[in-house]
Length: 153
Length: 102
Image 1 (cartoon, rainbow over the protein chains, first blue to last red):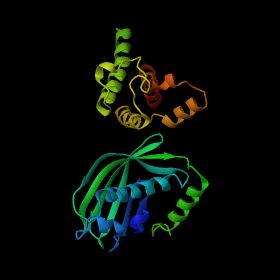
Image 2: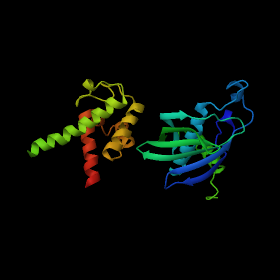
Image 3: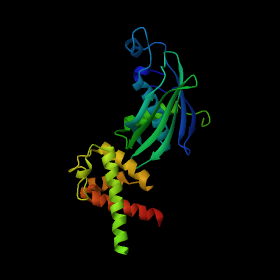
């Protein structure tokens, strides 16, 4: 995980494209400028970053359902709760399940756990559309290769 | 009686649409009329409209083809009014519901 680069998923542990579910994992870095500011002498992962991890999990699930042919990004947050603090060095898991697939948008229920306990949960809307350019499509395809689930390898 | 029943079906679609719009946006119920244009008259933007479509998809058990509609409007094959004036939106929903059950 490299927080400052929004590189938030270390591994895809489970990917069920037909069942529309995914589980991913990551370990938080011990040091980051984000932790320097949030907060000095009390470093915790900001809630918006927890949300972004869940968004990445759901986004990757959708991206794979679209076979890498559509650009997926966060369109809205219908509900979000941040229940526990997540700290430097913690191992986290994010799960996402698509509850609705509309035309050009999808809705996902997502959770973030740390040490088996729920740290956050959210219902989010993801927009999907054609890639704005070939470069971003290629870059995401390359990144996607590094996240391949063990069962698929 | 048949005519009355038909009117009831049509108005029930509009009632549901109006209720969804009132619940998911700041538009007051009294402004939500069959001839109102969702964008021009009610000021609903594209992201708010997604919330409305999500709720309507669920309530009617359909998938409103928003991308196809947008494409048709952009290509000049359809007018915005065909999809975004509420009475027309209701008619499109009734068509989608009928297509689902046929």
